[in-house]
Length: 98
Image (cartoon, rainbow, N blue to C red):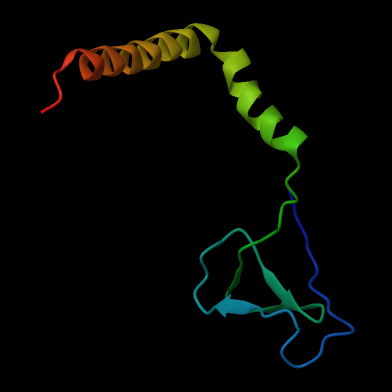
C-alpha cells in the first residue's frame, strides 16, 4: 500500500506558516521522502493537530455511546456509586455533632 501527502502553503507569511521537520535517519526503510519531486535522504516527522468544536449534542453522544456498548458495567458502576453516596449520607446524618 502506498500513501502520499503533500504539504503546501502558498499564502504563508512569516510567523503564520507550516513548519516541517525531517529526520536524517531512515526510520521507514520501505518508504521514501520527496522534496519538490526528488527523493531525499531521511524521513519526515510530523504530528497532526486539529481543534474540535464542541456542542452539547456531541458531548452527550460521547457520554452515551460507551454506556450503550457495555450496559452491565455501567449499571453496576451506577449502583456502586449510589451505594457509596447513600452510605456517606447515612453515616454523616447518624454521627453526633460535637
